[in-house]
Length: 616
Image 1: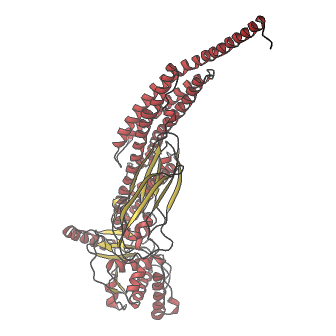
Image 2: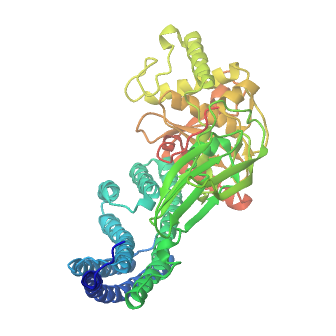
Image 3: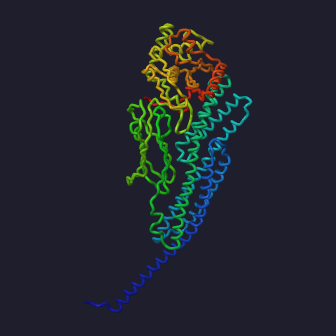
């Protein structure tokens, strides 16, 4: 065995010393480089925390101000506050970006400690800018929609000396505002609500159209228009309340994220700059929190379901990062399963959930109790985040009411869901009416021409064409065995109302049922019917000719019917504008005494009002 010489040992020791000195020097150099970054980071985060504190105050201010908004009232001061705060948020976001740019010019950290803090600050600044962007988006949106609506406000408050010209100006302004509304960049959480709110302008333009006819003597359109503007106010206010609620929730959410997330992470970064490390239970290591807020409907009127916007309204969001979830909802025995997979982020997602009805509809002839089943599941873990099985009342297909869970009382336009101008029963009535015309007026008269020349009548005699069609339709209904059932009808209560085909099948109908049957057949012939509600009763009015503004009043309970002179006089009469004004005035006085109501339902408004029945 050979022994190392003393010289050899000294050489090895010298190499070891030099190696250690080199390593120590490298570590020291890395630490010195990191020190510069950490000092810059500490300064940047300190300034950003201050900017975030200011932003949090703005979010709090906006939440309070938003809760103070009242639908239908001028929001000029609130819009001005939005503009001011949008500018402030933009400035603060710009300042944060400048601070980030200055920090990025520093050399990247080399130590593990520095790298950990580097990753933390990346998340901190990304989340900070994201939450400020969410706030600014909402602020800018409200100010923009307010500005877009100003031309309509200006038109509405203009001179009414020439009323027809005034209506035309307001009408044009309303159409323009609607177009501008639909072009706005809306926050994603308003993606479903905003178009619904905007559609309420269609009711307003229809109101203006009816007012224009009313100004030249169309009493029924004018009467209907007053009800239409009332309904528009109720519907638009409901949408506005929902929008304001979501805006306020967004501001509160932004405030919470800044206070409970960003400020916490910022404080950890500042401590890490001073003490050397992030805590083991650092904010960076924490899982995201999922927030949900939802409402469920507690009753379903099947024939009004197609006109319902939603049965579940869900707001869902995280405090950071993202979560993949699946949302399901169904009413067993009535709807299919609604299912949607979503990636949830700190930006609020708002869903208006309405499962489609079953393709094979079960028997809905009687009411029953059932369940609305709603569930949110985490796609990764399979955990159930939220689950409800709420008892609901599923009414029969024939149950009718004038109320709505979505909008409160919206009166009797809901009867439009019972109109079935294309049903087999209505088409059968038309065929029988044509057969009656051929039998009584000859083969050349075998048609229901609507508002087209027929039966040998010319200019100035058009009302006779409508008169004959009324007689033919009532004769057909009578010949098909339908008789008047003197059952009660209440305008304000839940009522069982058969659809036209069911009336024909049962050969019996109360006043509202025979009125809806007649109106459906008239509409099927491209005529313009209205349903006239007076205390305890329902009748039909039909325009004598397209654009005439004059209407026949039809007593559809006149069954059986043989088209004799006496029967015709009992069935219908052409009322002048003065006659209609007097008739509605007397009915209104009676309503005041009995506690009832006078209401005119224009059957042409079903599409505008988004009212349609269930194909059953």
